Image 1: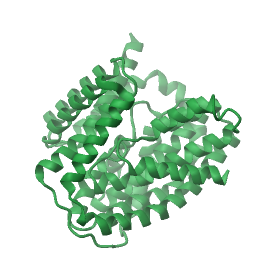
Image 2 (image 1 turned 180 degrees about the vertical axis):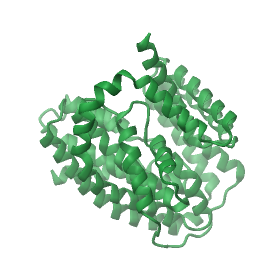
Image 3 (image 1 turned 60 degrees about the vertical axis):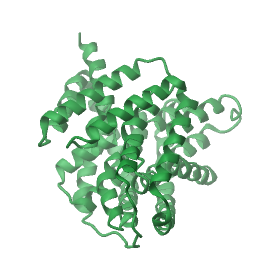
Length: 393
């Protein structure tokens, strides 16, 4: 079991550090192997591997997000405060704040998992019948709390229309080119255009108020961990609405929220047999319904892998901080763009490449507007709202 955790942390480190390779892809690959090459392997070891990989990925993913400007859907909100700190020479502290939030979250998860599972299993059927109205209300809350309401509505709708079109195309892994374009390659192209240069980084240990961001994360994460179409980005926005925090507090909040949402997706699988993340879906494919004992094993794996990932992130971030100012940032961004295009072609074909181009152009335009990047998650929210709306008819 401990070997499964270590291998999972190693795999999650690779997927977290390499832009474009998501744990969802590794999960799909592992599920296919589980019915052939790994058929003689105890399924419990496979799901421990997946859970550990998911948590390690959640910690490591902030390194390319902040240092390279190449986030995925879970880390896109860290770009603005994280990149600001990077340009000030405090990139190390920015990543460390997210990992510190994640470390607190793995302990909190162990405490709240079973009480929340009991609550959700009791009220979920009632909630499910009004899911359309809940998702619509959350969307209105996220949109109308912004000062610039018209451009926010526009970004939410245009990304939603794009998501609706892409999800109805007959391509494999449609989310890969869609989300990579909106949140990854669009920001890389903007960085190349602006000719960003990274200053020498200082090694400062993080300091921030932990109570307020933790409180917001604990309240918001269960809501987004159980509702479809809502992920870590929306949970972070809701958490910040609950607990108004500064730049450093927000990075701590995002780190905690990402780990809680990922961990609660395993709790969701146990409580209501619903998957809210690719990792949880892979676990369901391999083992089916979770027992409380299996969930407890997964939670312990999350705790151990989280602690290991915290210290591993510290050392890797220090290495990146010492080397980053020596790298030609524009050249590195071009290499990453080429790599993302190749990954897209491999997993989604040439039609996926066209989707990547379209979503990249959409992302560049939306990034030019005075709107938070999280509103581009309309690409998933609007199709989900329409799905539940049609069920009411």
